[in-house]
Amino acid sequence: MRASVITLGCKVNEYESGSILTQLKNFGYEICEGLVYADVYVVNTCAVTNVGEKKSRQTLTKILKLNPNAKIFVCGCAVQNNPAQFLKNKNVFALTGNYGKHEIIKFITNDNKILPKLNNKQYSNMPRPTVFKSRHYIKIQDGCDYFCSYCLIPYVRGRSVSRPLPDILAEINETNAQEIVLTGINMSDYKIEGKPALKTLVKEVDKLNVRFRLSSLECNVLDDEMLNILKSLKNFCPHFHLSLQSACNETLKRMNRRYTIEQFIQITKKIKKFFPNASISTDIIVGFKGETDEEFNQTKKNLQIIEFSFMHIFPYSERTGTVASKMPGAVDKAIVKQREEELKQLNCQFKQNFFNKNIGTTHKVLIEEVKNNQALGYTENYIYCYLKNAKVGEIKDVLLTSTYLDGMTGEYV
Image (cartoon, rainbow, N blue to C red):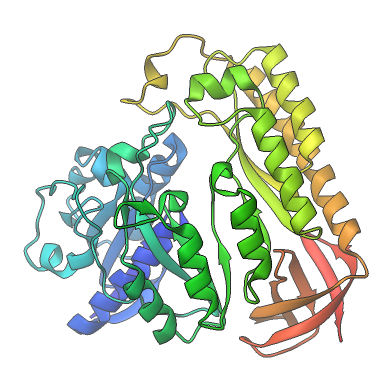
């Protein structure tokens, strides 16, 4: 029997899908990933936006075009948010939300269609993921206590819980990946015995002598002490993804974000001082409830002050059950689209400026894929590189020479 796992959404879902693959393999399935022919499918769904949830539903339709007799199991955030939307499909034999992924075989073998309650008290350990890639995600935390007004995630992931440090370090030691990405739903909130411990974690990870990077962070964890620690580490990759969401204080306040734009700007200036070649990226929501032309223009102005390396830009997606869903001030869709296009143009300018700044600099590039006689991979500061042929898993010293497509070309040193 062949089983495929299909993943939608975030890096945490990718990590959890790796664990699901391990569980399926240990149970005796021949395993694969993605929309390929199989007898059994596990769909790990997303609900961060309406589009994510819609894609989760559409995936079931695509599966049935490949194999009308497929046995489908669904899990994840979209199930946690609204299980009924999947139970309509006669090929769905079992489901679970986010709690239950660590024991997915139990739900599959019992054809379980009753959604279990979220576990809000402690981190649920998962079997080690099956690793197929040179860059491997390590989940360190789950859930979120922040309750930003637009966000559904605390309701479908539960409260913030942290993974024990020894377990994190043990998994890193066991993996054969050349690069580790520490990830979580709100990894800035990582704790040991109830106390903030991200600083402790990065120091311990660095001792394992494997290149590593951090996924999305809240800006408030990057104080002088944290930046000094990161600067002292020999294996840290200087890419900072800081979720900004808006660069206007009035909008940030309605979003229930925990900083002002002035604080955020100061932190990005400090990062650039400590790490002159660092990549600093972000997420921006356009058209949030009540966003006026003046607020949007303030966002544009402040983004130009910060000048990110690149930005992920999303139109506001209303999620039923959030505080924002009850707010007045919906922005006209045509205006949202126009604002999105303006920020996309700004993003292209930022990316080009960042690439130009890196021409003539030397970086270590992890080769993650070889395709059409090109070696493809990322620098430590997260520039996608198109290089001459090399082996997957090699880390090469590369002199960056020019911009190309969505990244840069370079020569081996």
